[in-house]
Image (cartoon, rainbow, N blue to C red; front, top):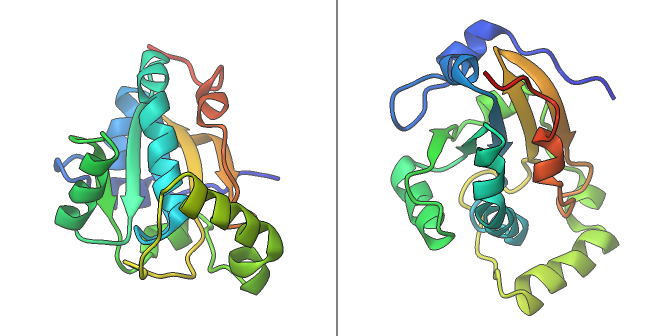
Length: 179
């Protein structure tokens, strides 16, 4: 599947909680841009846990992690803190404008509630104790992960199911030239 091409002016509009923009961040070093599902979603919580465990390795590879979420920054920072991701760089997108610009769509019934998602959901929410809650954002929005360098997408993982679990380290490994 061909990665979407994103206009650089869109990346320049994507302001982080620290006031920088995505384009500038990607010109300093590669960025792993993680579009999250809503914070009530067990798979979003699992993603935060997975990234928290791999953050050191990803950063050692020279890549900065930037999250995109659908809530206000204060709510997001509470979730990041819970998953030991305090001081994370993130972009608030409550209208899902940037999700759409990156080609991330609304999920259909099978993508969100199909058998595979239900089985993984039980494992994730109950067994692994990530829990779940009412949506904080658009409950139909699908997630995705993009590795961007110099304003160009180098790698992408676009979820086919809400329960898909990317290999975050593999996405950044060997895809970017580190200055």
